[in-house]
Length: 314
Image (cartoon, rainbow, N blue to C red; front, side, top):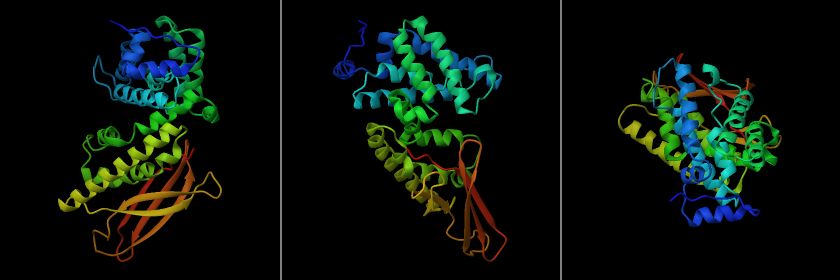
């Protein structure tokens, strides 16, 4: 039997009811908006297929990410004492505009506006009331601008999106995006792990909700523990000898604040065994401040470098 939920005057009631019923995010959405999940999935698949020139692939990384973010948003909303329906529906739509028109929208503001327009068109078809729709749209449109701090839906979306990149599924996503694309494990780890380690270490500082901060501490610990174990096994297997090192740099956007940067580096030059000289600097990129790190061997011409966008601090 389907359970039909209503939004009461006190939003905490719905959260408690769903917790008692042990509903998951899929059941919560389907109980109010039957068929919505499958519709969103179809739109995302169609946009990905159009981007990649496929006829009808049924697998989608973006859809997996969407469901992951939606499940985290459900958990955060309940822990924050909010009615989960608005945040989880917004989470379901948060990336739906990424590939509209068969193009990759790299600008987050454009992407979220596309997502909001699709939500505005589809949600009334599934019976969402105007008041609820306004909350979903405002949450989507506030996600990547200064309004995020004042919008509880955007705050939950923000935290859920970043949290999805860490923990077991976050680590799996890291390898899906890099190593499984025919990159050797050693190259992937050296090329991307400094960013992953730094973002994990800073993750709790980037949360906008108390529930997000609590979950971030656990996910950051789990991710860092895994990556340390991975480096140990890479070293023991004679695939790569990379060690984690830390530096603190002034945060470019906040006076009197610093960021802990964690990077991976061979303990000595792999060509001659010489010691490294390190230099770093920051530069404004299109959407972020980028950190550039360069290592030069003191004895030979060996040179290594890495660069990535610095993490946000809430």
